[in-house]
Image (cartoon, rainbow, N blue to C red; front, side):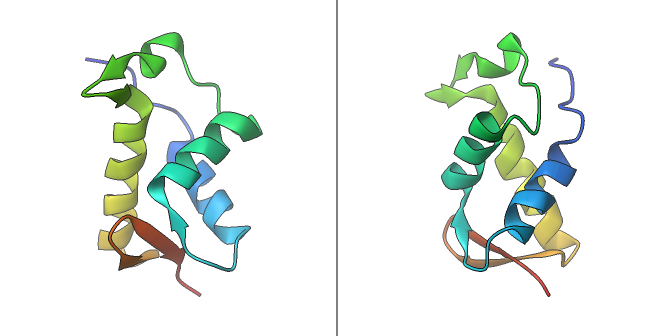
Length: 83
């Protein structure tokens, strides 16, 4: 089993907070990779099911944030921070 990505939930919250419009999960992943908010370990970059492993972690975390009512899923794969 891979190690958890420390700070992933807070990084996603921060990215959604910095945008007024809905973002796709892929845009969130690209911002995480490009912003330097997190250090993505090489094993998290390994391709599993056609995409880097940390993409799966981002989608799982977004699902959990929706369940907690912190984030709204506005469309398939599109997320917006709740006010």
